[in-house]
Length: 302
Image 1 (cartoon, rainbow, N blue to C red):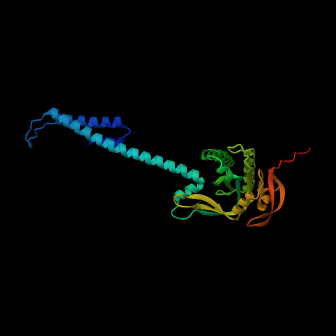
Image 2: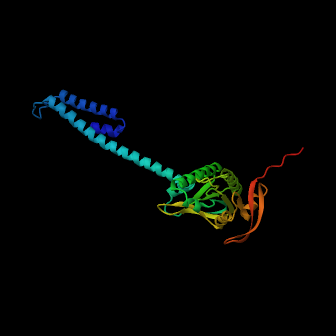
Image 3: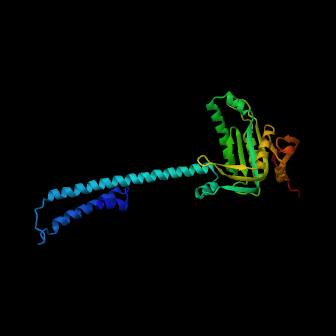
C-alpha cells in the first residue's frame, strides 16, 4: 500500500523516489513485526518464520508497486497523447482561421460567428490559362508549381499583416479590414497588391511558358463568418467581394484593376491610371483604373 501511495503522491515520473518510499515502508513493517512483542497476553504466541514473512512482504509490495506503476504510467501517457492532440488541433485551427476567430470558435456556446464590417477591401489574384496548364502538366508538377506560388504569396500576406481568405484553383483571395477593422484598409491592400505584382512578374509554369497574373481590388461593406461544422471555413460575402472578383476577371495581365470606391480611397497616395468605362457583368458600365505604384513625395524646396 505504501508503494502504491508513493506512486500516487510523487507521480510515475519520479520512479526512484517512489521506490525509496516503498522500500522504507516495507522495512518499517518488517522491523515492527520483529521488534514489537508478539505475546501480549491476549493472543497466544505463534511461531514466526521471519524469512517467509520478509519474502511475502517484499513480494507483495513489489507486485502491488508494479501494478500501480503500470496503471499510473499508462494514464500519464494517455494524458500526454491527449495534450499533444489538443495542441495539434489548436495549431490547425489557427492555420485555418484568423486567431481572433479561432478563439471565438473555441469559446462559442452554439451562436453563429458572423460579423458585419462597414468598410473593408478585397483582393482577387488569378493566373490566366490555368485550365489549359492543368490539362498538359503532370499532377506532381502542377501541385509543386501552385505550392511555390501560394507559399510566396502567403509570406507576403503575413508580412503585410492581412488575412488570406482562400484559394480556389488558381484564384487567391485576400481581405483587409477583416476580422480586425483597419482605417487604412484600402491603402494596406494596395501595398500588398503591388508587392504581389512584382513578386509574380516573370512567372513561368513547369513547361517554361509565361504565366499572366491579373489582380483586382474593390472596397465596401462586407459580412464575414464561419460556415460548416466538421470542415468549417472562414469566408467573406458582399457586393464588394463580387466587384473585386469582376475587377480581376476583366483586368489585364500584369496589372491591378481598381474599382471606383477603392480609387477614391487611394487617390493622392498612389499612382492611378484611368482605364475608362468597361462593361462589368452584373454591374453594367463601370469607370475603373489601374494601380501603377506608390506616389513619391515631392522633394522639399528651399
